[in-house]
Length: 305
Image (cartoon, rainbow, N blue to C red; front, side, top):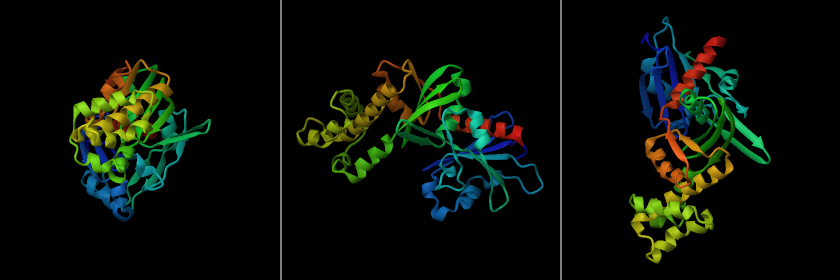
């Protein structure tokens, strides 16, 4: 495939998204598989790599594309560990701290670093989201921007003229899963179906002064006392958690006039009404900015090689 300039792999905890990209950054082909680092048996990342993108790799003797990987694949539990870059950080920071590696079959790789933040007793890290943010720079333009990246561990970041100044992590998705699987609330919401009305009730509860912990048991008590229909209970919990996250994030991070959302529409469409309740505009930037962030990294690496 002589038109391939970059192979970009956004390799996270639960999924692997691979992109075959042209010299100008256009996405020629993409693949999405449930092959995140948690799903790889015995840490055999080489086999997963060959399975997903092996047919994109040119035979020996032909010009090889630059292969860049980002996300949790660069964590301690991943294939090759890459460092964390302290914030504030810009795209060049990722280029200068990317690490070179090589597969068992001899393919050269570059692994993107993550970002870290440590101040005032608060510690935080991200891997992968920084590439999504830097991949959206052309859409965002200069100035200050507040970004939301929903997920298992949602990230909210403050970007200023292309520099990530601050960010916060919210374990919203994981907390929902833990409560559903390992708490008394699970016996209630296992019978639930999606309900817009239940979700809206959860968003409303999240804005009350009582706070998240005081409302969680409502999921069970409300169904027992028949003030919350059982079929709405799961959606109520989702709205309560997302609404609490949004309330905290818009309080903790300074810029509040607009929130730019990056991610899967199934998630971003839930965050939009939660953010709108705070009188804040929402702008969705698309799902594949991570690929463009990896391409930006590849472009910077080429200048160094």
